[in-house]
Length: 334
Image (cartoon, rainbow, N blue to C red):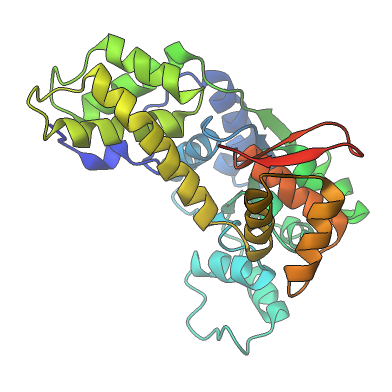
């Protein structure tokens, strides 16, 4: 039934991309100077989860690498590599310059200097979840490297700029912004149809079942692909040997729970603590939440930073909030 499991994974980058022509054309035009040996302006891709931001960025950089022979490239997930050292290390790793770097003893300034002295070969870096960077001044430092082109990805552009200093804002305020809206159900059906064609046997699922998956996914391609993946695995052991509506309905909550758990597993220690407190209390106002957080955190962050963390938890549907600033209530998402 499953002929190629790779295409059912969320990180799979297809050779064809559906229903993002405007975004592809815009970002392609931004990156075009690289094909002439010039640096491209920074680009900021923003929008909710599961709308194709990371996929489109990686898709276009792969196409760019086919045109430009001498081009360096690195993808960094700043949620995982959120410290200045980890991000710099990952960028140096993309050009094979980490062999003598020691995580405990090598100063961060040495890493940055090594990037600056890495030659003049164009280097495209995708900084995913860029608002998760602990030290936003790193973006200013990277911007000043002449051969660097940055593609920044964030759920909300405000989350990126709210904690940035004036120096960084002045550099990135005019960066090219590309907004990604949620997918319509018909668009998700087209995306799923491609995955079925590339990774499943013929006649295992019909269009009406794909429409059911799309309806259950709420505009999120990650959820839709996750449902399809789990449903295909379940159908392999079913008598009908097909993906039925019952299987889809059974696997939808499991697929959503799987994605939610994957998100929770990636939280930083402070985000995890805030999420745990909200989950324990069911609902809690901001001041009570901050007080409880400060009592339990080893190194409590400022209220402003905590608001950024809470915004991130909301973007990933882990919590909800209701009311204005003074009367706001945070709740764990069911």
